[in-house]
Length: 364
Image 1: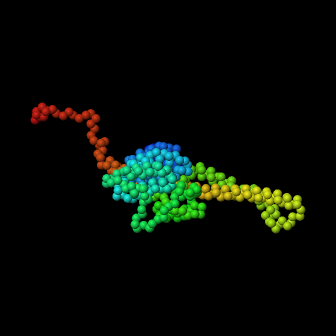
Image 2: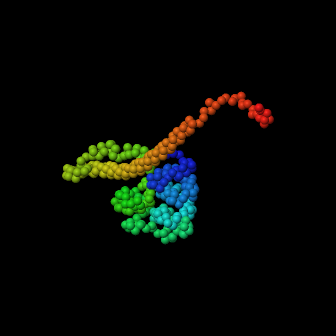
Image 3: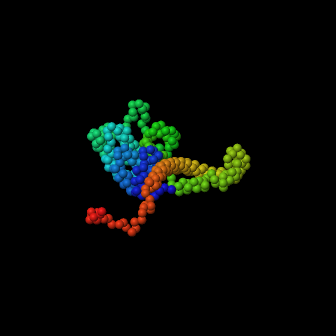
């Protein structure tokens, strides 16, 4: 069960997130789960972005991208809410001219949003313009050609084919989910959509193929399969009891009169209707099972991510516990070296008054 949402909890998670794919996806999953707080989530994200250094800003932009693209299935709230702050976000990304990697990744982000139709061209242009207007730490403006053009790979790297990107990540142009064939690189994957292979460009870290279902959704889908067509024993028994004449053409020679032929025609009509309906139900069941398979895959991946995060937390806090143990041991050692106040003389009645100056001079 996911922890409840609070602003302080989100700020803490944003402080802990790193640029790894697993870290970003895990936090993205948590934010999408709490999508009813989308306005607060975007507000906190933007506030933390303004305080971050330029390299961490890239991580937060990747997080926003992951949330925007993977929340589409459950609603447009995040996409619309982030759209209100993205221009200002890009206005606050200062990238040193000599840091080509960060600059290339930010440019790739805008390129992919444009190619996938994540945002309209007007907002993309405004974001590009905002990024172009920034002055780098060396006092030189970011080159326009570098922002508007796709990033070039290093000379040593082989040329890559232009990606065919449309709609949601790892989906075909018609919105159908594709099957992952094999990864090609950190930024490209080849997917198969309706038997046709396509090359899709992703960000690194890339977005997950599916939005993991809520546990209630998965349980309902599994329960629905219990009443599927393949488990309908009554219909299968009716099909098994159909007379052989309805499926064997050779037996038509046994017909002797018109009445017998009309009776057989009626049986054939009923058999056609029965089998057509059952085949339609089986086809629907096959699609349902494919969907459940995808849901199980996405759910298992999300659980693995959460398990890995939990293991990392255990390791982190185990180290903190060891440090606390060490401090406790030091405190005990210091306590042993301090004087025992109980062994001092009892001065409950007070000390004798000090002698006056006259007394000192008159002493013999």
